[in-house]
Image 1 (cartoon, rainbow, N blue to C red):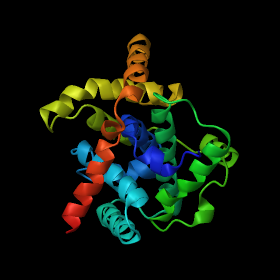
Image 2: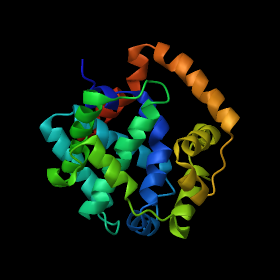
Image 3: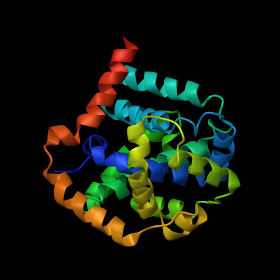
Length: 244
């Protein structure tokens, strides 16, 4: 059976890739420039994660009307952000979500290959096209995605580092979020390529990270499916409740 975007998007392990996705996005100067001037982005990191996961969940699991509604919500939320409607930046953001989903998934599942990998990449195009990006702008194959990814013009500057620091070291928010942040920083550093990790000034305790991955690989796949899909079902319910 081919693994599709609905299988991947329903998996709570995607939460582990949230920090990785945000730092990848900020590594694009166009994204960092716009975000740094959006005053409350770094002040409410949980809202950003919730917004992204709500968008992904509703786009994948919602009705066509719901998918259009959540895309409009994202458009309104991004309206103050400079460059938010730039097609190239939108493709980059969607690509970071795909790449982060794959890396987070591989923390606990075997890597995808062959037809599964190609089919999933094709399905992931909806993350970009739902916002109005032309389908032709999305890589048509894994080889094309790899070429696109390796040729991305990334430059982690002061703006990106400032926002990343505020995201990973929040001074506000619920106590449980702040208590969880050391683990978030560890996973984020572990998922980042060494070059970007160094550019952000992040340190990786490799032994601690390897130990965490071993525990995840032992425990997570044994959790009931209802537990592993609970966060995404919650996002869909919350969206529908607010829509009413």
